[in-house]
Length: 353
Ligand code: NDP
Ligand code: ZN
Ligand code: ZN
Image 1 (tube, rainbow, N blue to C red):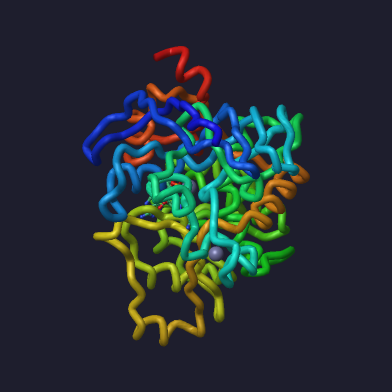
Image 2: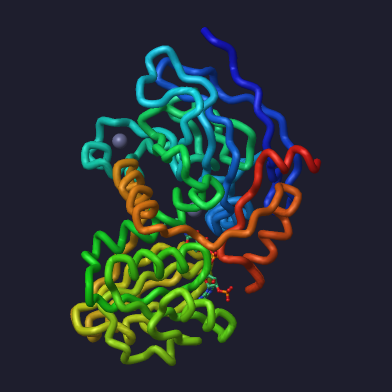
């Protein structure tokens, strides 16, 4: 038996807490595992919902982070897919059962035993809570890693493993193509990636925000229309709206913006005590419109998304920070004062402590 692996990260210890350096260990390198030196980790709004127990009581101490990019440091005896020095990515989950229907469909994110990267027991390692990417290393089975070309910019790639796949996947599911009219509701980390992917797929894109603040940025990035409220967008006749909104809102308002038979794909996941719900009577009267949810994407589709992003030169707008800034970054992201995506420079985070 090889030994457990010492690790350092930045943890929150309660929903009112602040981030602090935290020393812990990761499970030993299994035969098919890969040990990764983490270089960059994006900050997703899901990290905030989880860290502050907005989706239910979280597991503490918690090291969030599921937009992980790094370099292979060591491989297990029977790991064949990667070698030391390769660039790799880890997204929102690190394992699954491999036997259920979602696993067979390569939609592992829906596996009943999916091990999310943080705030989740590791069902395959004694149920120990799994720790995320605000840390210096991670050990993951090779089948749950994404291959990154060695010349690709890791700091911009990291956010693709959640913000990228979460927006790419429903656009594909809804068969967006040249001429489709797509709306993006909520224009932050996920929203600006949705805009970029929809454009690359040939769609005409409208952004629906909640203020004037990001009008110029949306238009500069290629949006055809910018609406500073959903009421303003009424009647726009869109084929698909992708909602990335992390706060309470009225679903019926967005149905008013869709064309006949249009779709509202929901990825934004507000706190559980303020979750929007569908008024069935309104839905029935709204013109055969469809409302569906979408959760990240499976490993195969995540690799496809990454290859598509690199091919089309689609990267997030990022601001590099260190772990010292996490509390402030969370504040900015919840007070309409944020960059599109913050990415933690992990090496620098330990230097400045
Ligand atoms: P960000 O904080 O980066 O972006 C959210 C954006 O939504 C901000 O631009 C914000 O605007 C805007 N916004 C907030 N409230 C409203 C509103 N009522 N109407 C219109 N716009 C609004 O968050 P992320 O992009 O990282 O995440 C978004 C959501 O997606 C979160 O709930 C997250 O948990 C969820 N998520 C879901 C995933 C899935 O698989 N389903 C995966 C990843 C994330 P402003 O600038 O004004 O504050
Ligand atoms: Zn995320
Ligand atoms: Zn499964």
